[in-house]
Each structure stands twice: as structure tokens, then as C-alpha cells.
Length: 191
Length: 197
Image (tube, rainbow over all chains, first blue to last red; front, top):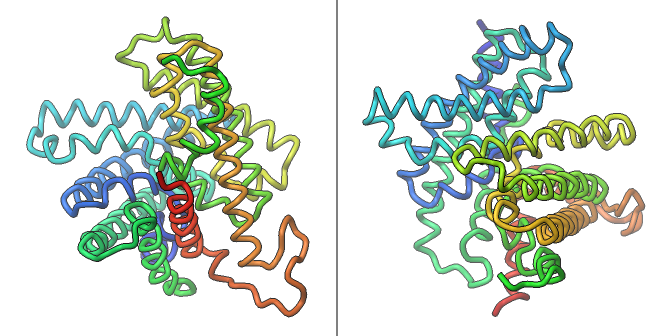
């Protein structure tokens, strides 16, 4: 149990997917202008990432490795993720329209969110067991959500400030992200 | 669209240079720019994928049904990424190790998919090649420049050669994640300042 806790904390705080591993930065900057979109994106990522993490683990262990097709990993993973996202979208539209209305527009964006693909690859590269892959997928997703929501909160305040013209928009957002990343940097050495 | 092939090529080098003007593909720009060498290597790998996928998507644009185009693009891109991955593993193993997970992640680099969707799917093959090459080289230059700044300040070296002499105390900050964000942000601000219309 302790091991899983360490794994979770290191994935959420120490190796935060956005701020320490540099994955998923496009949606990080794209959906953090407003708190609402940030929360929507965070929820969608948690949902998809956990499922993608488990399915790619199963595909990798039982299909690719058994058949010796390791070199097809990139193609197989991206196809799993793309079809999973499509499937989740259709499923939610039919059965849980309320959730679909909330997550709807963020779902297609997740296909090209490198955090999802990145975590799937990390799980495989680190040779995690099934349970470890589950914990790590969930924890990375929570870390993504945490960083995104924190960042959106800060960014809403920055909008009110007077920013020099060349620094406006993406530029100041990146500098802000750097400072938040510095805060997360303090967790290094914790685990 | 009466733009000449040269214009399509040149626009990638300044007007739409990624990741500054087109704010896409930030993850590799942040992650693999610890040194000039890594930045350029990543840029070249991306250029190759971009060029090949633009070419193939443009050739297949009449065959691919619009409804499943994204899935088709992804398969095309993933194929070329696998090619790059295997080639790099065979011939440039140290670079392969230092870029690590970011080579397979070229698949989800928004620039590549974005160019297929926004450009190659609608244009004939020659402009698509010019576009892919231009954007790819632009991306390589950006990564190289950011890599140079981070390597010089964070490590006191350029392509492995010491440039500031022995008395220089490197800013470790620039080599770590926060430095990447701040460095990219400030370079973007500089670009805005210089290229102000």
C-alpha cells in the first residue's frame, strides 16, 4: 500500500505531468483562460487518461509483447487513444447527456493531448504492473488537473493586471507557468 | 490561394514560425531544449515527419473521406514517426536516448496534425511539400535558438564547448522545467517586440 502512495504522490506533485515532465502543454495554455474550461478539461482528462492507461497497458502486455510487435507500439497506442476518445464521446452523448454537455468540446482535443499518450508510454517504459499502471494513470491525471486549475486561477488574476504589450497573452502565460513550475520544483527530493 | 511555392516555404520561417507564431507543439519545445543538439535533433525529426505526412496526406486528399480524416491523418503520421524512431535508434543512439519519450510523442505534436488538417488536405502536393519543409525548418530553428539560450545560461556551454570561461557560475534554473517556461515566454515576448506590425 505504501508503495502505491509513494507512486501517487510522486506522480501528482514531484513529477507533475505538466510542470515537471512538460507534457500536455497545448491544452494547458489553450484552456486555462477561464476557470470553467479549465475544470472541464481537467475532468475530461482524468476520465480518459485512466481508461487509456489501462487499455494501452492491456494491449501492450497481451497483444504487442506476446506477439513480439513492440515496434508497432506508437501506432497501436495512438489508435487506441483516438478510438477510445471517439467511443467515450458517443457513449456520453447517448447515455449521460448532462456530462456530455459539460465535457463535450474537450473530448476531441484529448486525442492530441500528449499527456495521455505520454502517461501510457511512461507506464509501459517503467514496466508497471496493472495496479501500478492504474494508480499512476490516475495520479498523473489528478496532477494535470491540479496544475491546470491552479494555473487558470492565477491567469484570471493576470488578465486584470497591466501587462506590457509584447508580453501579452501567451508570453505572460508561459512566464506565469514558469513561476508555478518553480513552486512545484520545491517538491523535488520529497520522494 | 495564389501564393507561390516560395512564399509557402518562407512563411514557415518567420510569419508563421512555430512554436512562436503558431502556438502549437509546445511540449517538445519545452522538454528537449536543454541543449542545442537535442533541440536541433528533435527539430529535424519533426521536419521529416511533417514533410512526409504533408506529402502523403496531400496525395491522398481525394481518397480520404472527410468524416474519418483525423483518424487517417493520425495513422499516416504514426507510420512516419515509427520510421523516425527506428532510424534514430539504429544510427543516432545517444540522441535517441536523450530525446526518449518525446520521439513517439511527435505523433501527438499538434503542429504535424494541424498542418495536415489546415493545409495539406486542401492543397496540391508541391505547396504541401514547401509548407511542410518551411514549418519544419522554422520549428528546428526555434528549438535550436531556445536550446542555445538554455544551454549557454544553464550550463555555460554551446554544443558542448565552454563559452564563458571558468569563472562563470551556471544558472541551474535555466536547465530545469521553470527555466524552460520562462525562457520560451521571454523569447516569445522578444519576437512580438521585434515583429510588431
